Length: 194
Image (tube, rainbow, N blue to C red; front, side):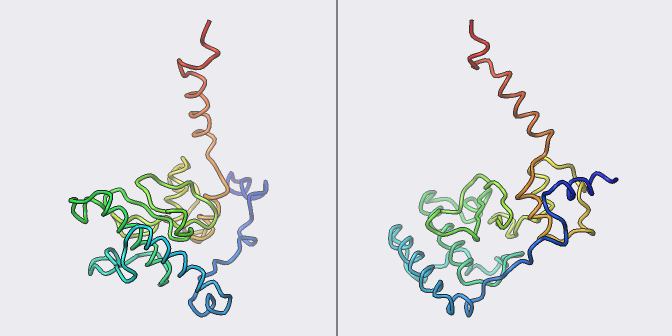
């Protein structure tokens, strides 16, 4: 039995069970009533930070392609709000300086402030966007961030969606071992005091 087969057989999920990725469309949002809901939340966040309703400091730039993201008004607005807030926080810095190391999770609600200079923990449906690189982290990249070795799960055998799902439902034993040892060997830990 190959190690990869073992991982899928012990209950994380099988490739056949991975749910298909759903892309939100404005038509689907309109039908469900969510369109007005997210627009209202976005308007509240913009107002709280003194941002004009049509201000698009990130997505209006010619070089921004939003590679890997669906063409979604909601996603574009989240990225613009996050970038505008960070521009205000770091006034005087260039666009490139603000974008360097800045990440966003546009699949999250805008009220959670899903932008930061630190990465979010991968979940099964999380999309992590890099302002600096103008792309979304692939499922393979998410697995590597969790400590899985490169090419552990061959990308030619698994879709990006399946790899993201696996990243959101997994952890790497070597990384957990390192963290446990670091915690145990901490000189300030109570078990080392006499």
